[in-house]
Length: 297
Image (cartoon, rainbow, N blue to C red; front, side, top):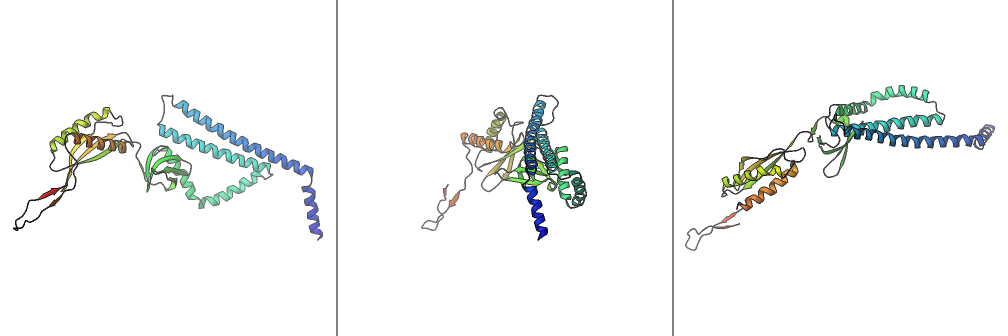
């Protein structure tokens, strides 16, 4: 009983001591001040990095905009992590924790944990190689495994990809084995045009070729005039012509829609309609002779 009374007296002595509360108050103020300064440093640092890259835009010696955007995000992430780590160490010092001994112990523990955190190390190393080799950058449209979309961010450990329908995919860098990048080289728009068997094939090809020659003047996304390759397939109901157009990266979907619209319009102007299914009905008259065939659309 006396032992507990001794503990209670010591606790009361420290708890109700004015100096103790002064020290706690000073520590809280210091911690709050450090957190505020850390936030200010991060904000200023990100602004300086962004201004630096804005100045590089006016320089004749530049790397690609994609690569600069990726490096900008990476440097901002590194700055944030470094400031957070320093802030954490300073807060521990104010709380009276011996950081030197803690770091020494953390080094030993980190060595043991490192063997079990190989995937984390792999993610970080792979992320650096993705940026170093310029495999893809922020703003690129890529396909990674079953995921496809625009790259929003390449971090130290993960890559964020936004799909065309709005989903955000967060992929560990170490899991990225094969990448298909659609944003580096020119794309190709492939358009198949169907016409009926009874159409004038030569007339259709001529009007399409005439249309294609003038399209690059109206659509700057086209690198060269589109090319009519000729007959792609022949089916029981239609003849399919194929048109190819080399366009700037990721503009093949838009140009494909434009080509279909304008080719359909020019064919209609020349009396060439799209093929439609036709049904042939036959009947026998009262004498048992074969009647005339009636066609209906």
